[in-house]
Length: 409
Ligand code: PLP
Image 1 (cartoon, rainbow, N blue to C red):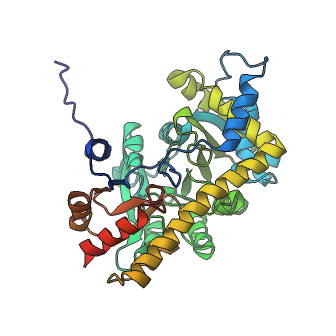
Image 2: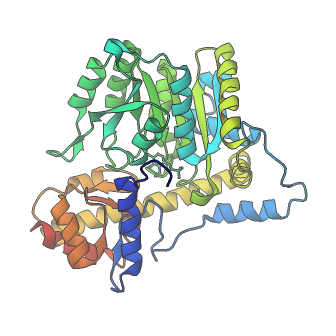
């Protein structure tokens, strides 16, 4: 007896169950659209050719040992990672106002960012309210748990508009405008998970104007840079624009998706401070927090990414590999849209499939239709109608489209 209740979180249980049921299903045409990882056209995990090359270099480098990294990570990794997301000519980097710390992938960056804010951020406490973060509804299933874990409550802001299968922009602006000054807003700067719906550049301008006006803090979770459009700079546009405009912010970075390094846990947290002095203080607090939690971050993945980011030839090859992944996903979006609208004449508007971006698509189908796809057609997806585009390929897309057509008709 532990003397406390141990219950699995429903969302975690749900995802595990989905994968287990998929694996146990002997049906030959079964499809797994729950998985949040890239698959190639043969439904296989893909080791990026550039990662293979970098691995070979590391394995044959006699200088590589297994000593501890510094607490805040491999410096060649954190500085190149900051340039990748903030831009190599970023004013914040030039003014040495960025505190970068290597983290356990994007999850660790979110955790460390949340922990840091829970300790040091002057949250509005109007009317005795708790420390609070605003999360999009819906959002990545782990966000709530990560913030609640460090004593930060969450409130939802509407993000998805079921009427248009697009962004609930007016509602988002309303929440930004009515939240107490200095509130913390978590935003996905590209490839929103789970909807695949991103604000346009003009909408980001308006969002950042209100953030500035209200002195809000932007907690930017960027897990898909490059993976969304195939272009690293384009996907970092909102992050860089926020820095340019002086929005108070931090950014969480992951190399799980764009480098296919899911299990290596390579990520970074970058906190943009107003001055170099403030950034130095932030860095020392971050290193104290990180020390008590992980002592030192893992070396291998950070070395791989540092090699790729700092070697011009490897960097070019990485960009090719990213385009390979992004283009395959974009091609699947187009083909699914074509099958539904032109061939099958499926009722409803399916333009959101091609307008959405990144790994996921919110199809807009209801939970009954989602369940029917699983029960009748052996297509595994979460009941919110989210599909991982990476689970579709030239061999299974027709089967999926035909069955989607059946359940919504
Ligand atoms: N943030 C978002 C929005 C995500 O979708 C994910 C992964 O699915 C992550 C963060 C963290 O991923 P990882 O910890 O594997 O980098």
